[in-house]
Length: 279
Image (cartoon, rainbow, N blue to C red; front, side, top):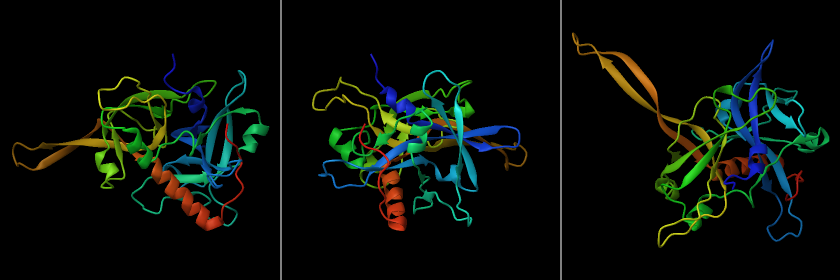
């Protein structure tokens, strides 16, 4: 029995910063196809993106993406330029600086030609925006999976995505647009940034609610809520040391924020021919 679509694992990418002697694996990302044709079109076309956090791309000129070739061959690394020849960034951030989302348009034919084992999330088939989440009846307590590479643990010879999970802790204020975050009750660490959050199928449901027979991409990991405590001097009563710890609550921007970022790219460059069809 599987509760997670194996293809979702192949859509997750390890992201690193090139160093002189090696590289430093710092974040996660995922491949996402956004539909660019009318929903009634016979043949749907998608423009493909590498999605991660804004803070992952900011201040960098190049990054490395790590993929598994088909078969049993060792993982391969691909260099990604984040600027064009004039030094202009080619990645696109969300228009709101507080929303930690960035996207890079990519040509997945390169991966096909190099015989890379990969997959992607399609906006029409595998993703659920806020409107769809409400229609599905997703609530606090519903389980999720978080996919990524915490603490730079990308795997030895080949990429090995880590799957963690936890229930949705808060989503109601996201539904009424009082927050740009979904809160998930799970521990995340450096390296999880930019990874996808997907729902876990759960057929069992209480009376008056509906079970979830499918898994959907619902958001992107952005960080965690810190717990802060202060040590106070017994002599002066003044704060001396501040301790900050991981509260075990992760924040994720809904997939709507990714779609909003991609629409900015459409405005800047015009809609281009998609590089992939429905799987």
